[in-house]
Each structure stands twice: as structure tokens, then as C-alpha cells.
Length: 435
Image (cartoon, rainbow, N blue to C red):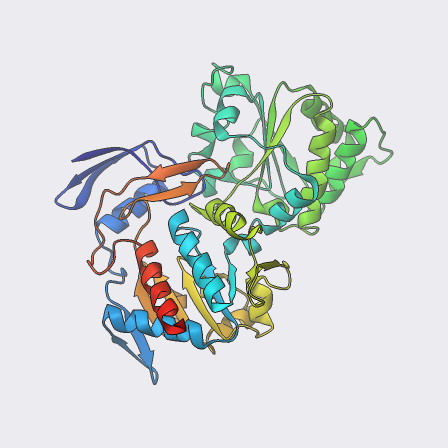
């Protein structure tokens, strides 16, 4: 059977133009996916030797398979017994699953956070301070004659981004594709994306703020006395400032290279103020290069439900927001969390040593597709379902456009049809305990 307009559940591009042929419950052909997406389609279709199919529980140092009912009961017991439980992850789950996750966090009076707090959290904080003149990826493809990637390397991180959304598409007002556009990359080193750019500007590490400030001075009519700023000759900076102010419509794609540079959210604050100045002359937008499939969706759903995009605390019975205090890294480093549910995330592979050491000490529940360092630390492991492949899902692309993903495969077990259903079963047990 041929499934058209299938969504790729890998990166923030959320490509929904893929064609998949399924024979006998397995994928026999894939058209349109990048190499990263293709690898995930094949891995999920073939089952994978690392795919988790039955719940696992650790008792007295020994790991054994348990029934789904036993695993769900244990998950509810761990979360309701804790004083400071944390729900974490969701960047590769559906918006429907995120909603249930928020319900669980509120019911148990715990915390909820996602990868965004240590990923594009600084971008969100900058947006909250200044506001963001954003746009859709469709507008970029059809209108933009200037594309800037700042601290981003989409050739490696988002393989179809340039070809589908930004540099190469033949848009309504850019019929010649790349020949109708200026393509600039600003980074600390010449990445794969930098090598193919029309212009590559190499900024000194941790000096992005200085470069943005210099551009603001020029755009606002000032002069620069230095010959070089942030490792960039002033002549180049002046040329960039002129390019920004004379384009018909430009877009700056912001990557982690800018948000994780020294200055963090101040870099984004400064960049957005630069864009505000540029917009007195022309039209310039900013889009964050969101990494995971639905990390933007987590921020959207949490904001609907609580008014805040990440790092939310329900300890007092109502939502509170204090990044840096209630963010997952900070709470684990300080040893404040006493139980955690991690879903579609692998904190043990990415967090600082001190955080992982604390994870090993507390009751840890993982809902995952495959074995990871986090599942090896977990006291309870529940099999996950691939949203957008094995279950239908709504999700948000990196430009915050909501889309719907189709189901075209069945999960390798029948006890649950989606992560949303798994969380609902845990939530119902938590409610039953409170009666």
C-alpha cells in the first residue's frame, strides 16, 4: 500500500511530503526523505534489535520483564509518592501526549520541562523580552531574497531545510531559486553550510553579541572607529549591514551556536533589537532552528495550559515559571528532584555528570523506543510508540505552524496504541489513587 504526504518525525522541518510504500507491515520503499529521516523510517519498520517491546522493572539490582498493568501501576506509585517529581521530554511526541503530560504534572504537584529549556530556551527568553517578527517557512520560500543562518548548520542538522524552505526553492517571487537570493552564514567555524554559502562570516567564539551590537550601530546611523570587531573586519560588517537594510525581504535563522554562545538570551535580545532597527528600512524576520520533531509543540501546548513555555512548577497548586530555578538541569544539579518520568528523551546521554549522578539515585521512569543510557539507569522502562508513524499526531513545525501526521504502521505490541494512551493510563491510575 502506498501512503502519500507522510510526515517525517525526526527534525523541526517536519517534512510532510514523503511517500512511503508498505508491504506486509514493513516499509519497502521511501521517496522524498533525507538520509536521517530515511534511516529512522527503516529502523522503525524493521523493528530494530534495540526496540523495547515489553515493560522492564529493576528490583534489587535485577531487571526483569513485567506486565503492562504492573508497569503502569508502578509508574503511578512512583510519581504520587514523590515530593518533587519531574515530567520531562515530549519533543518527539504528539501535542496530545504533551497535554496529558501537563495534566499529570499538575495532578501530582510536580514540575514539567522539555529539551527546550537547555536548547532554544534562550531564544524563547529573548522573544519574551523583545517580541519576535517571525514568519512561516512558506513565506521564506516564496518571498525571501536574503537568507542568513547564524550559528546554525542545517546541512548536517536539518538536511532538507535549504532545498525545501530557504535557499533553493523556486518561490512565487523567487522563480530562479538560489540565483534570486543572497545566502549568508555567520558562525565560529566554516561548517558544511558555510562552505556552500554566498558569503561566510567567521566570528570569534563568544563574540556574537559584539558583532550584533556593531551592526545595530551601523543600521541606526552610527559609525565604527575600530578596524575589526569580534574577529570580523569592519569593512565586512558594513557590507553586511547594507545587505540587511537593502534586501526586499530577509530571514535570519537562529541556531544553537548563537543561543549557547556567551551571552545566551542576551544575544537573542540584541539580535531582535537589531531586526527591529532593520525593519525601519525593509522587512526582516527571525526563525529559530528548532531541533526535534515537536519541540515547538511542547512550548505551544504548555503555554496554552499554563501561560508559560517551559520549566513550569506546580508545587503550589498553580503554574509558576522561573527558568534557571525550575529548569531541569538546575534542579537535578542541586539534587532537588526525587522522582522523574522521562519520555522520548535521553538525559543521561546529554546532561552534565552531576545531573546524571543524581538521576542514578532517584526513581526513574523511561518511556522509550529503544535502549539508551537513560533506560540503563531507569527503575522502570515502558515501551514507546513512534508518533507520526505508528500513531497519528498533531505537531508544530519549527515556524510554529501546526500540522497533522498520519499513522501507516502498527506498533510491535497491542497493549497501547500511542504514547498519549500510555500516559492516559498512568494518569487514570494517579486519579484513582487520589480518590
